[in-house]
Image (cartoon, rainbow, N blue to C red; front, side, top):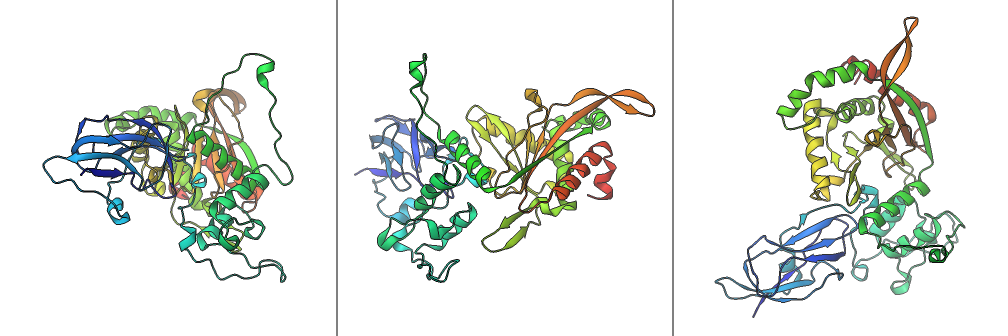
Length: 433
């Protein structure tokens, strides 16, 4: 009798994953914690380890299969012990957590806003007590509390969503379907079918990855939900870049790279403390603003798997050397595909730097439910008129996008101007930040 190894819980909000690669064969001897398959969800690529050692006797899945937690992956004969079979959910829950190898992605999107809600067993979940919504003659809405919460977070009126469950119960999938048809593409706007491009020349078809699909969903949702405003400015970083070059050796000794991004991280954290509206979220359903007392900043990283946004926590309480080390480590994890889902959650503001790609000003999309994102472009030497003469100065372009439902134009302008001032006069961080 063989021991069955099942797919463990993959992380909050991940209810299915596709088999990308099977890492063992029938007859192989495997060790405990040895990776046996690689799966990809909308949030991450994951290596799933075996929880016991033994010899593989059967493989129950194949590449391309969609798996759900608790599903049997392989059967093995354990080394030196009587075989056991994991049959109940409690046993399956003890399977060790998977080793996260990459990102979704958001959206991952690795982006918090791209996260699907935690899967629900609707048939076992009693809906909230029904009550009229908006209009006194409106019929009660049958939906679980978590489904209602998800609808509020993505800006969908739950009362407009048709339910397909028992007695019209509305599921999270119903909310997603409604949002895709009525929100992400705009009210009354539906994308038509594409033409046959092959009529005009040679084409190649590639499957959309889970990472790209989650990113697209997150960005569409953010763009449809958030009324964006983008402001532009530039900062003279000549002096701060000289300091960076002077002290970069200290960061290298600690295992990091002292980049302009690391310095801007620290300045942005101080700016968020001075201008807390940019470190908040808006809940229109509850008619309230959530002001966050912590400062966790996501940093967009370009990887072979797509865009991911690992989050550096408590940026306001760390010095620039610490931030440089952590940024270096997280960026490397992202490129190696080893970020965990937790690494990409909890952000309050986002920083994206496209300077290395030659970009100047651009319009970054707010990572909902955050309300602000700062884009950094390529710094270059420009003539600046100082003391009655033009001088060569290193100028960096900055682009701030924000949610106009919560952040007024004047608030955004003050935040961006504070950033410029602090980059040009770093003492402001100590005086006001």
